[in-house]
Length: 469
Ligand SMILES: [Zn+2]
Image (cartoon, rainbow, N blue to C red; front, side, top):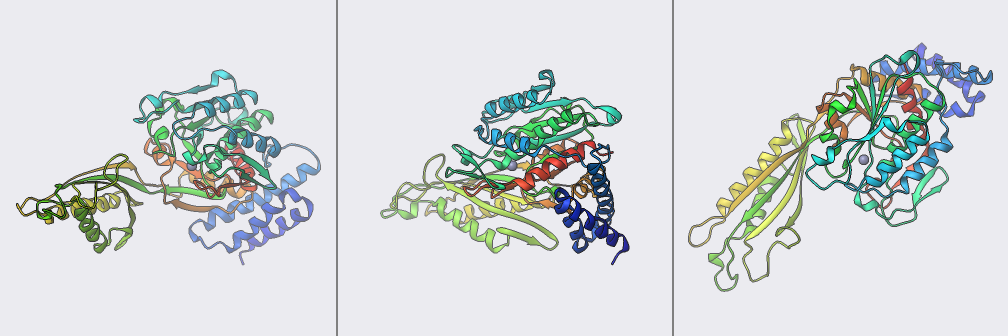
């Protein structure tokens, strides 16, 4: 066993007896021994030692009820939970964020952020789908010894999925659950709670911190639009950002997939299926042949080609907006509309997957002909939804994230996400961004609930990230 880890165990062991508030954190610090992620083990071990020493210091400080700059700053968890319940009670499905924007502004002014430091941008004028309001941007000037350090940013999204409409959040022990048969909205009111709690605690405890931008994005759930269309000039040039959107506060997400969304229109020819089927060209048959080809080529679902990996899916198959594909059993179907997607962590590979679909549809259209020798036709359109990213683990933002997670007693789990995040766009805009969770569970389903332990950890983590040197 590494002697340094041994010393951590020894030190943490003492807190467990001494201070219940830190016992959980210390236990998790010990768990670091069993970590199998070799590539972050060194940082983690160092951070663990540091965290343990800091906890030790904190313990001594608490006994003497003296405050010290290096100690972990406690968070008013009652106020943080009240805030979360307050934000959960405000409906704000994607595209309809005006009310939650007002609630967040009110909550921020109540904790001492001047009204002049809070504004909405005009991203909604650039978002191609109707959006009530812009992103909410808050400027917190630096304070104390860190006031002239480079600016950092904390971000989250303020919309929820449409399934959250009508949610009735209820506290139940260390969980927030839902009394209605809807999704709850922990995705992403937990992030909103963390950011406002950060502003509240920085002000209340008069903590030293660098200049901070808070960004609450609109329309994350419907296409990462708020983050995509934010005007980066308005963010005050942060050197790094921390995004809150997920479950575990120990997850350090440093990369995410990229994705294409594609649509294909399949044009055939209608004819009476009983009287003159040979005159028709079936769009449905073109679809079937194309998908068979995609499947046989290994391009459907989980796609693995040598070292390259990705995923793809075929989504809605319709006859256009609100119509079924095909009009009747006795009519050869002359039009089918299909939507699908391709994803990969490899910036080129998801486009290759999309290309395989395009080629298969075109080939299938040529194959389905009528008695006159005419074939079907397809119109295939693809658009990149967001670009993949993967940050190097020696970037300052990643190091700070790992160190902070350890410092609040977590075991950093450095990983990449298989879904798109607002961070995809922020990184594309030139701001390296790490994403954490803050207690979301079973998001986007009617079983959604919030883990208050993780939420509180998320709040403590934000405070740590904002105040560490
Ligand atoms: Zn989310």
